[in-house]
Amino acid sequence: MILTVTLNAAVDTTYRLDRVAPHASNRVTAVTERAGGKGVNVARVLAALGHDTVATGFAGGATGHHLRADLAEAGLREEFVPIGGTTRRTVTVVEEAAGDATVYLEPGPVIGADEWSRFTDRYRRLLRTAEAVVLSGSLPVGVPTDAYGSLVALAGEAGVPAVLDATGPALLAGLAAGPALVKPNAAELAATAGPVTPLAGARTLRAAGARAVAVSLGPGGLLLSSPEGDWRARPPEQVRGNPTGAGDSAVAALTAGLVAGTPWPERLADAVALSAATVLAPLAGSFDPADHRRLLPRVTVRRVHPAPPSSAQGEPCPS
Amino acid sequence: MILTVTLNAAVDTTYRLDRVAPHASNRVTAVTERAGGKGVNVARVLAALGHDTVATGFAGGATGHHLRADLAEAGLREEFVPIGGTTRRTVTVVEEAAGDATVYLEPGPVIGADEWSRFTDRYRRLLRTAEAVVLSGSLPVGVPTDAYGSLVALAGEAGVPAVLDATGPALLAGLAAGPALVKPNAAELAATAGPVTPLAGARTLRAAGARAVAVSLGPGGLLLSSPEGDWRARPPEQVRGNPTGAGDSAVAALTAGLVAGTPWPERLADAVALSAATVLAPLAGSFDPADHRRLLPRVTVRRVHPAPPSSAQGEPCPS
Image 1: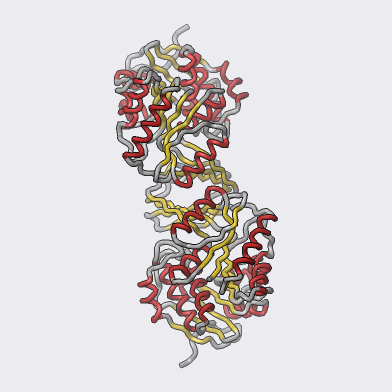
Image 2: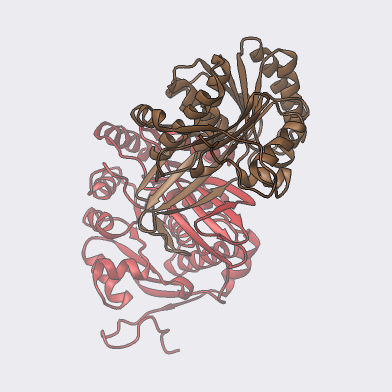
């Protein structure tokens, strides 16, 4: 099975209304709620692709209860560790008239030292039957700042490849332990590796310990740097929709490819097609398989020549 | 005991942050959550005044679980009827820099015919030991539109006086069954009785069946019309703070006075003082007893002369 870790999981609530009247009472016309957080989205997508998955992390309070109930209802296996605090909620207010959304992120619970210890015990046990582990998202307060370093190292000891999707200090702390793959987006990469080209930034992260680095370039697709070579994958068309969770779908496809041992170009094409299909779906963590199938054969993947810092990156090779 | 009915109860969530960035991600700095809805606030205030209370209504889903747990934690007796739907949530986003708030109200669950029937059975049983019943707030979808008519009539059959705090068609449907008291605010009264003076509007509602009508005039206090006479009660000072729940505190005081059989001027003074003390407190349903005690002796209550439609209303009698 593939294990996904979401240390700061959430219940994602979406409010829809025509237009927000600031500093007044607003009647919401539609409410949707579901278990969220990047690792939970990855688990949903992997399960939809037919993979056996287990989602873990922390869950507490009424929201934690809701999170677990929602995963159970979706048929997703979960092994969340109970905590004394309360799982956070995110509220996204979608204004239909403006076609735009305002997001409110709760700070999330504080994790106690004993809770972190119970989590690492559970994690060690789950690694025994895992083919790969995906570590996603921000760290809740109270968890050690080098949490991803420890979790990647424990995976290494268990012989399980780790995929890390994090930013800033949490990402940096995970690199030295040698994750199989990290997946920053361009802005996150620049915040970590400095104002260089995506390919140069990816190589910096590899030098810091990551075996491979996939940089998501939003509508521009993915750039990959690995010991096997560097590739750029581009979607066949500019898709319009909800980009939330597109990165999580790319992580799911890349992890599925890692477990299956498919060549990088295939993995990247699948990641870009699945990402684009997710943008077309209304909710993070979901996609229409018909979109995935339609887009997949039309993704272009080309090898990238190493280029001097001043030239354009990610251009196709001359044919 | 005093029974409070909240058919569309809620979990009230408050988000605090410095300033909202519209159409962007906002990190909330503080989150508070508690059981809410007008009848729940009334029960909290009555309990704080030392009255034995039972809160009822509908509760379902994770939010319903949270609602009941919060009432239990506050030491409030509750007899909420379980439903298949999910109790609604309200989210109030307070911008500290602007000193203002934007409120989002979820639509709430749909009540099934069998659930309404289970509620009326429970209500009938609870009436047996009630000295008074308070019916507050909006009706959830699925409940009969004349719900308050039936509930006031059932209270009448059980010999229990009913206090009704509702608006629009829900209020109108309750009048003919003869509630002991209704408490619209000036805007709600105008929406029901037409564009007349508050005293004329109050008399219209009495003619439609209410025994007494208390009109809340916001910072201007209360106007009462009853078979015993008409009174106007004014707070001693303009209080600044959070007006949410001020009307619920007035209802609590008027119901406590009804049960105790205190004369109208005393009831009204208490209602105005408790309302003002609630404005000074940060949360609906709470007040500082010291504010209540300090304000109470300074509320002015005067009899109101019936006046022709063209003259000012609510002026004190010539002394």
